[in-house]
Amino acid sequence: MSAARVVACLLAAVMCLSCEAARSPEARMHRHLKRLNKPAVKSIESPDGDIIDCVHISHQPAFDHPFLKNHTIQMRPSYHPEGLYDESKANVASSGDGERPMVQLWHRNGRCAPGTVPVRRTKKDDLMRASSMRRYGRKHKPTVANPMSVDLAMLNEGGHQHAISYVQGEKYYGAKATINVWEPKIEQPNEFSLSQLWILGGSFGEDLNSIEAGWQVSPDLYGDNNTRLFTYWTSDAYQATGCYNILCSGFVQINNEVAMGASIFPISGYSGSQYDISILIWKDPKEGHWWMQFGKEYVLGYWPSFLFSYLADSASMIEWGGEVVNSQAEGVHTSTQMGSGHFPEEGFGKSSYFKNIQVVDSTNNLKAPHGLGTFTEQSNCYDVQNGNNGDWGTYFYYGGPGRSANCQ
Image (tube, rainbow, N blue to C red; front, side, top):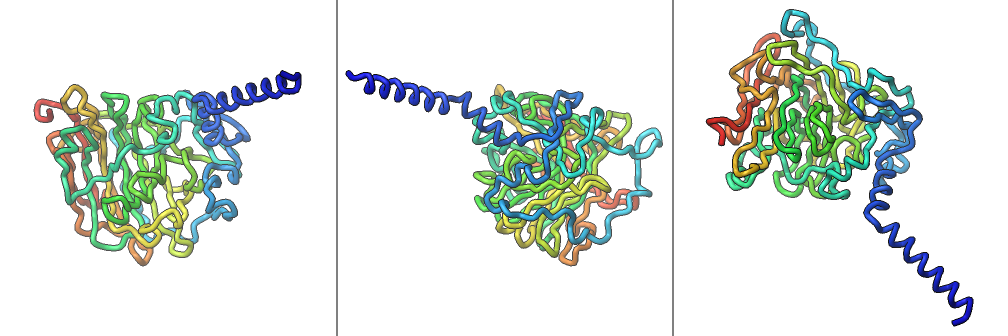
């Protein structure tokens, strides 16, 4: 064999090895992390171990979406809904000390500058906990409560359980709620507990559109049991589109102070001080995007209308409430808690609540929901009770302990 031929064979072998290395799980993971974690202007280490990267607003994950390549960021909504509930007279906490402002834990060690957005860094361990890199940051199966149907087979096999209030039958252009924040105990690492609102369009089949926001405890997603702010979206019933927070392209963040997926601090204590967060999601009547506001002053950003089919027009159902995964480990119901882990009848300071729940109508006005219904698959495990008064408007208590003598 000639020298030239030997060299050619050696080069080919080296290239094959390089190709094999590029296809290795380690290399694929490295590329995936590089796609998720954009170059940071500044990085902040949170007391809980998170790294918050301050990413230039034009370099955020949203702009990986092909339809957003030449998108001009809308830095503020054209309109806010009219009739935002005046909570100044409704601040309630135990010990009479009033409602306290909520912050995120990473704020203790720094802030992101204007012109950047805070992004929770994805670590190698996060990807390794996922069932696959492709499914990282995505829900595993449809998880929206369908008040018209209780799938007993799903309950027996282990699935998602809810305790919610809901409205349907009109066109809805947004929803609002103030949500009591807790740290429910999770039994299995692949289970979660969350409290959120759902903006829904389409059927409960494969064409479901959903925008979701609230707080969650999810060891599988975050690697700990901290209570975290989260969002989710899908336009095909959780199949191929959408994700948690900004773990895929879609949501355009404009705010430099609040990080999706970061820990909320402080949280409520049983018979102690109570803390809550307010979330408002509404459709801008001019641009058509779905905007999210956290608290009274943080407009976080928007989901562009082109991400959706049904929600490009309006929502047909709104849900508020809690959800847990019941994995039925060892054939018994999970002891994963919903809300505070206590039933609604225990009331303020002990049970978790949603208060001042409202919907946005076709005239861009916030109003009390009409014909509010409740739904839970197993009220002996997790329950919900509606109410109404002058201070809290329309509200409900919800939650429960999961497995007990009455919940097997």
